[in-house]
Image (cartoon, rainbow, N blue to C red; front, side, top):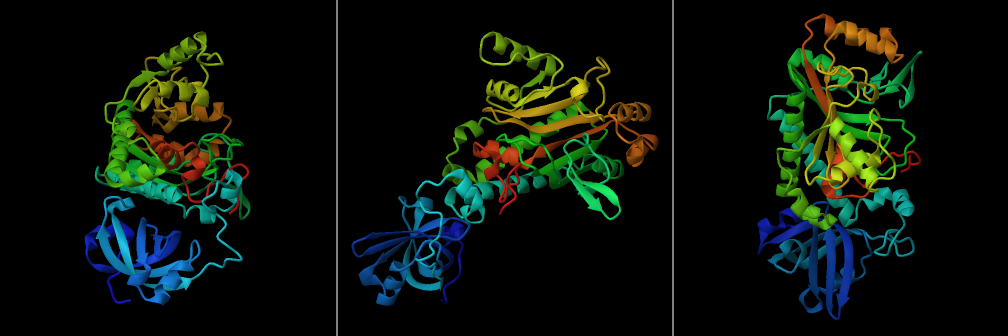
Length: 441
């Protein structure tokens, strides 16, 4: 086929021209002597129109005999049609069948309803469906936007190790790994290491996989997920909140600009996303605790919240559902947070930390803090948490040689994708989710 190759997403640039599309048959309808094949190529979906009297008999027969997910190279003229998905149709003139899926062993995911377990077992094929492909394109946009946000603001990308000798946030949720003659762990966070590179480079961020061995089956948990983690020298808590607010606003705006069509395919109510712009509401942990206690008194929450506890999923869901923008909850009790967080000088029992809860009940998508700057206090906290001081000798060095106020946060990509796409469960936010009982495919 001699015509220029186009992706379906770029088809509008070729209106009135004959182009070649390389992809797969998504669906096929027949109406008398007309065929309406739908083709996908990973960038989008387009409907072809094939009148029997307008093409060679072998072309008509080849298309009529196609099975779902057969791979094809199709030639046709691009025609604008407002009724068509994407606004264009293809008047097909030629086809090359690369591989025809056998009718005796058909593509297992049909338009009928399938259970979640079946779809997860066939995740390698489920990702081809229109909705799943749209989610993965939004995910890619969020990742690109996060990188652009930090790159454009003078942050340096820095890569922490995935294999670590010690825990960032306690050892109970770590995956141990045999590392020659030593015990190592898969990283929970790159944070401790990017604190070191922030002292070298000023403003840094990392982006990579992280692992949590939590035996949790909630809709918000994966055992392997991706995090973007900025760290800034000379940053205090208010600076971090401003940065988080800017990042989230930027991500949502980019998705609305570039992926509105995909969001609509997913079924997202974009009017809710259009409200997401700075400033975000900021409440203290004390205020959040009071809200939860009042909600319990009114019967809106089953369990009574006690001051001093961490916010659980039902608590986060309730608080975030009270706002139409992400809400920042700051200054939690130090006892429920990680050992490295700077105490509030006004109330040392509180940590200078913040969790950003997404609206519509999505809960925490960002967690961060100002880091402890004092060598002596950090040693004390390491011992209080039962952690081996020897493993943190290098981390303590950062407090011996030019310590400064500094801080950062982590944003879980999958939770951000779940919220922006309006998904019920994080398992749809990553190509191959790893969960408590899911290691295949």
